[in-house]
Length: 109
Image 1: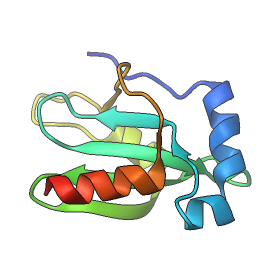
Image 2: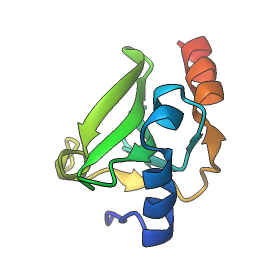
Image 3: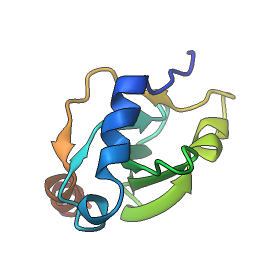
């Protein structure tokens, strides 16, 4: 499975979310990265316009629940599962308001 990158249009949207919109989760999670071999999910809702490596996202697994994270996009893309595969973008995911997604994921635990 090959890794997909975030396109420039989505990056622009994510950069506009940085700051107050992201802090309040009053924006949309535009991208969902998944590990097809596990329940690990990363929903990116903001990208730092001054440092495109810094993202804000919701991380989710059934065992750990949902966590807010300020993370590195490079580190995300360097992850590998036990088969050596990197996370991929879930092409079937449809953008969801971050606050609603946070609530939904918390209920799933």
